[in-house]
Length: 197
Image 1 (cartoon, one colour):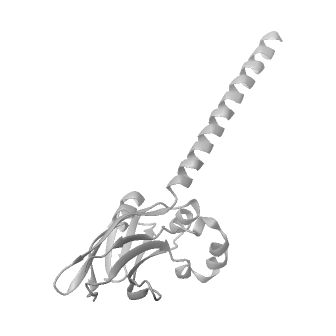
Image 2 (cartoon, rainbow, N blue to C red):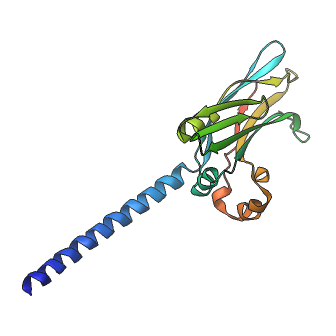
């Protein structure tokens, strides 16, 4: 009788410790996931050539639990990258010289267990074996051609870039929930830099 009581006391102590460890691990993993679930632009530049400008950027994508679940359930996620070239005018409203939207999609193929990145502007498709490799490729913009941007040498020109999950590209039944659920609101801050003519 005494031994059974002693065993049950020891079990309850260990069970309490295990529950505490599990709770701490769950809290840590949730906070880590929420830190990673965002889009950030690390760098961006426009390089002028003879006829065109070339866009280079480094964008970091972190998906939320909701977007990852949707991806594994066959939903294609569309990310837009908006480039704006703006002339700063002190006495009037700023003038938008050029606005370009680049569209990229990520899709998971269940049977092949691969992730496909699609550049919808240039109709290019790339396949990856892991989600992290696919997101890394999605964020590397290298020498993306942008039609000639005409600027005057005596004005201040700024370029800006932002990236976001396009909720409008989701299947129609999913959109109402996506509008109100913060797990679908993936958007970077606007990255801005001066553009030399």
